[in-house]
Length: 148
Image (cartoon, rainbow, N blue to C red; front, side, top):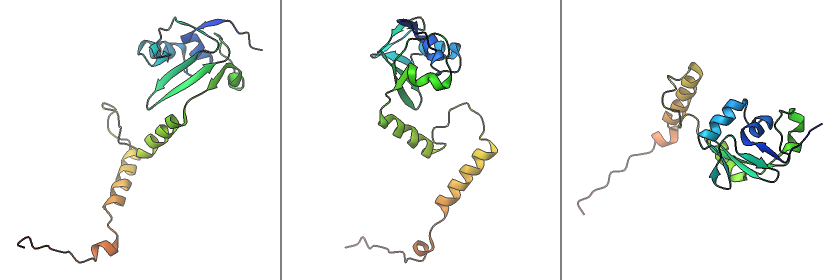
């Protein structure tokens, strides 16, 4: 089963708990300041203990995880509930949902041209907003006299 230690390196724990795909990506996130513990940025070699709450910023939201077991070896996805507890606030998930709804507003600079699918989505959105309902276009235009 799981052999838990009292402490584990934060980069190894992030990788073992399947928060990041590779350990090097976890280390880079720590170096960029995306991983914090009680408001302090963590270095990849920082040791974390059971009970610590780690915040991981993956734009557009910040996830919070409570460490239930300090492991350094990757475990299967079914065992993740024994390793960590997700304590991310519902407001953060609302932020994520809003960013998904907003679409292409926050397109990263330098990502290149939109793909064909992106372009079609943009065209569909633009055509929906350009269509004026018939009852509005049939309304008379009022002009106001400013001479009074």
